[in-house]
Image: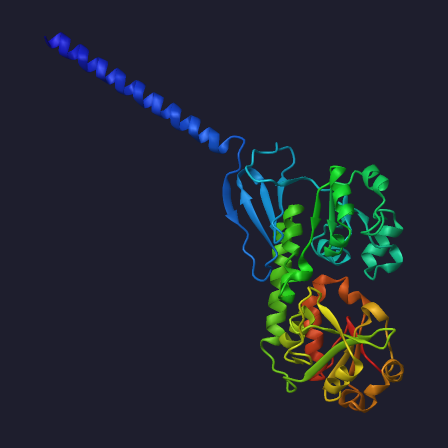
Length: 381
């Protein structure tokens, strides 16, 4: 009887072991179904100002970029296989070495993280660049012109092994171009930085390029320094002319005045510098950041403005008040003209996205009247 009881005990122990092993196999099988060949979430990128993109990090170096448009991009590390995903994602394989950078405002962000070597093609001609490093790279043949956004040289793009095209929102006017590039097997990111509500949100797009080029630390360090420098300067000093009204405009060939809308990033930069944007309630229903107004409406407000800034990006530079009055004689009796507080932007302003924080400082020093080494604008003589 004792022998039988012992034998039963052994059998129960063996059964228990078998059940444990089976359970372990089941768990192992389940774990493989959720990890082997599949994405396993790790964490998300923390963003301070940017609202138009997000980044999720997964195990084994995989990353997923999500744009405000809903498009998703799976960044696959060098040597790794494309994992199984339930969502539709455009695959971007690292390393990126032959980017077609059509969006000129984003090239400066790549420069800031030493990423220019990853760019092979641009949508801007050499003579239209105001950034010396890009001009030099094009002169050396390191970066070549591959056609503008609406008419790219597809053969050149293919011949140079393009591994990513970065477009701006202008491409939405030519959707067939985007579709054609994608048909060639080239991923296309339409950067949305121009739709960021906060000026520094535009600068924070540097983190997206840090993700693409595995330079997250460099991107984070640059961005934090920009924020720190800006806060240290403007946060600790108060302008005696705080609240001064500032107009930002240009006059087109038809004599119509183009101004920034109240919610535009230029208007917010002026406010961050301590000023008050002249047209603080100017809005309409379209998505553009600027709008045209009649001369009479402009003069009604601009006559009492403390400062006027002429936007050179479209109409070209003006260098003297007399030259400005040739375009807009109605400003002759304005406060800013009489007191000599009229400025003009340099064309490099819109190609150097990393200069946004410095541009805010220039608005600040324009209003304080302190000496400063201006780079993005100058005072009219």
